[in-house]
Length: 217
Image: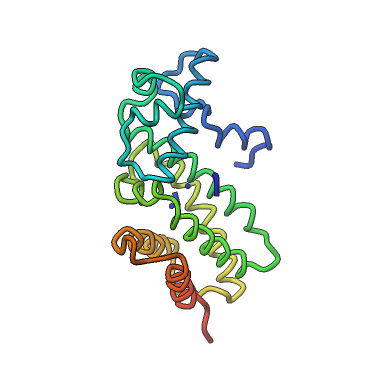
């Protein structure tokens, strides 16, 4: 997904695009009007950071991100006070996209398949997304900056889970926090096993966890 501890009202299409776009006003520290060139620079920084963080994780110097974006280091720091602040902005974009994915599957004709596809695809995306794994390890998800985004995701994901439980596809004695904990555990396993865990073995882990989530008579 080029879309994000995996944040994890209805709007028009144009509003939905604005909500996940890197130059969304929610990412600006000031309420003052932002110059067009400043917005463009911020978008370049976010796009460069998304690519680099995804491939290499957050242990990357700001200078490399600035070079990739074609701006100076000072420009990066004018928009983001720290590397963590930049990663948090990336995380918010990612989580908003996950939220839209979950919402789009809520009314699927096969709620069980919709849930397990979402679960599996999110985990597979996390396997190759080093930024996502670092975000789970580094960010406190109760922070004010993330609270609304996280709640939106949990609401959409909870609806997806509820539909799957109502259709007898997912066991009824497990809740959203249990499932998010399992997802976090899978992502952390990638880091702990380092090069010892390839995608085929990771898919096996996803399958094992999925089987444990399925409804049983």
